[in-house]
Figure 1 (cartoon, rainbow, N blue to C red):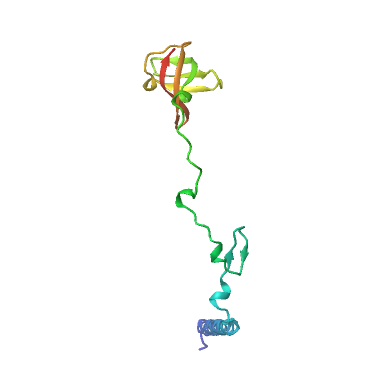
Figure 2 (figure 1 turned 90 degrees about the vertical axis):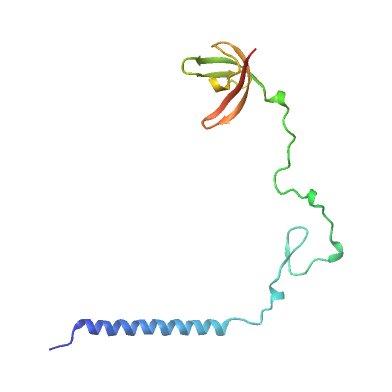
Length: 150
């Protein structure tokens, strides 16, 4: 009987695998031999000057400036709290359904329509009433709160 074709394929595959392994080791040795070990850590250091340029010369220690940690601003500077009177807006009730408990107020300045819920009312309102209100960000846009008739 003749030999199985499978055993020939197994031997060929084993030869290919060993050849790949040998080539990989050879390439690894070549990379190790070609690397430049003469580079020192000091040669790799770079410095940044006061203008943000990269240089290889260290900064002059005599030219250092003392900076207070309070003067360093990482984010947007703090703003003064808004005046409570600026938050109050004026408008007119464009639509209000008292049975469902919601409606819309038309702002007098911007003419935008702002949602109002019965929970945001301080007193009862009807369509056509002039009102003052504050706004808060809701899941679907601005909501009117602290709604009062004028």
